[in-house]
Length: 247
Image (tube, rainbow, N blue to C red; front, side):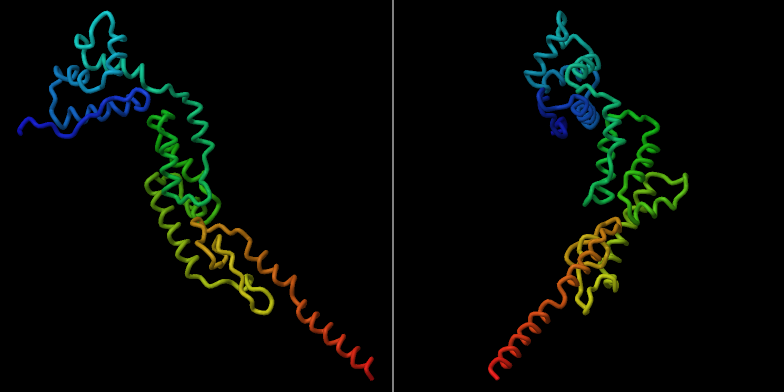
């Protein structure tokens, strides 16, 4: 059918949906289906659902929603159903964020972008995101690499550099042989497995940080050295004593 609509718009769920998100979808639906402006109020009333329409009807009283223009209806719904945002509370969450253990740079970037949504940084958004993306990184080789750049660095460039450096650190950590400091006396190897200190028990950290556990684990076996020989020596001494007593 020539008049068949592309896509669908679900009812607006008062308890769950954010009106701003619903409105963005509604605008795109009108765009792709070429809904005429004079028909948009009628379409909105017919698709938002009974509960949302009841609230809209109360807000329009004594007039009816069908007698109000589309943008006015949307503004009433926005004031009623959009969550109120405390800007500086959101910015506090944003500025206090740091990269978590086990969180790679793309995950860190995505979380930072999400935290910035309600901060209303405006035209300063990219500059603020760039500063926080770098300064919030865990200490390690990725942070060290980005600190080599100058102030002309852009956000997309910083993300690309961080991803490439993270991949290089992980690959070199897997391929590099353990250093001599990670072997205990007598040639017994010790594996850390949590960083790039040469361990083989698990995946190294993405940022190239060192946990220092390798040396601690290397020292641990040395404390127990010599005990089997002492026991054998004691057993040998006891045998000599018995033989002498028999003589």
